[in-house]
Image (cartoon, rainbow, N blue to C red; front, side, top):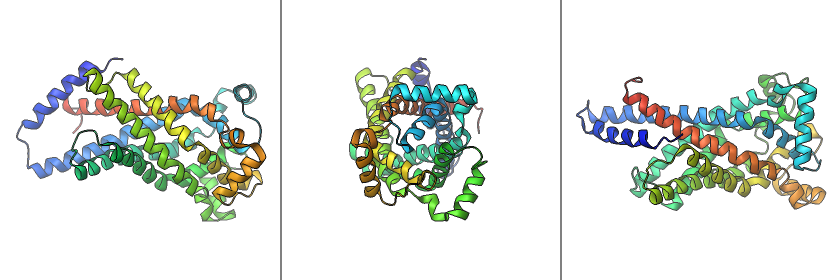
Length: 327
């Protein structure tokens, strides 16, 4: 697990490598930048895919509870997972995971890559090149990264929510969902629930990235090791997930209700209207925070795996580059 020693050597060799006279500096700068963008895109894509596949059965169960008015409890969630397994087999717990991947891979790639770029931009602006940003821009970089990724990939999330709560016969594949929704309900439907999503993403992405970066910074100051071990990264990511999830959870429930309104027979038009209806029917905790306890299990696992995978993949890619495996 300990990645510490290798990373120290890598740091040392990086600084030596940068002293060597290279081709024209502008060209190398451009190449370096392109490589770091591609690195973060690939690492982000992998991070999203690994994390989401790990928690897919919990995710699907959570969505089913969020959009129904059934009471949520750990026992009920377990029963639902177990019955699904008995009735449709083990792999059915991953139903909709390919649709999730189609959304998560571009989403995570864009989000992580955008975060690196915003950190660089804000770093340049605040004169903090290469160092950890001050708290406000640190929060800002995460929020902006989440917003960018959401705007670009939102319809995919809409499609995934529909697939998770409908029987196989209604929508046969991802493309089918797109075609049917735009034909029967209009293209605008693909962005239904967008506002609560953005309102939820800003605190979620902002606080997740902020918490993770802050914990890494504090750890480096306390331990004197520039890079934490893998299990420490997992723990930092888990804390980040816990804080981010709790801050934005009610908006997640509202978004799911608005997205699946066409299928569940409800008409949820506005954020406040949806919130009022949920609260009057099910109460604040049972309605707006329904399934949060499950998210407290799922969220930290997913975010922990995601951040750790991203960091370790980036370190590995840099190592491979130094060893001359990649151009």
